Length: 119
Image (cartoon, rainbow, N blue to C red; front, side):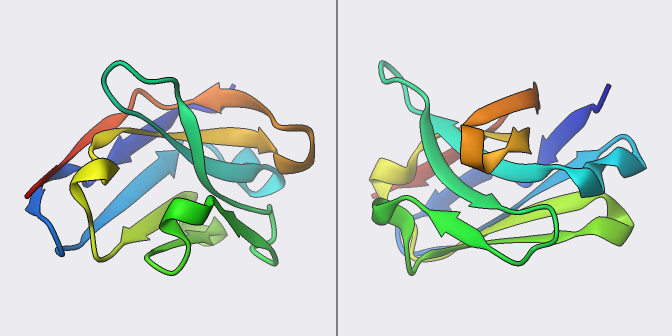
C-alpha cells in the first residue's frame, strides 16, 4: 500500500507560479509511474501530467504543455509539479497518483491540494 500526500497548493495571482509536491510512504514509489490530475468545480477529473518510473519520459495535457513541468526524486520518494504562468482556468484540486501510465490505471491516490488562481 502506497500512501501519497500532496502539498504546495494555495492562492496565487494569474501569471504566478506554484510547485506542488507529492510524498510517498514507501520505497515502492520508484516502481510506479506517477501522474498529476486535477478536478475543477462542476467538472470531471482530468489528466495533467505524468512521468515514468525512471523519469525518462514525461507527458502533458495540451493546455499545460510549456507551462508545467513534472519531475521526480526517487531517493526522496517525491514527485513534483512546477506550475508557471498560471491561469484562472488552472484553478482546481490537484491530485497525485501512482500507477502505470500506458494503461491509464492508477492504483493509489492522494487526498488532493487546492490551487486557486485569481485574475
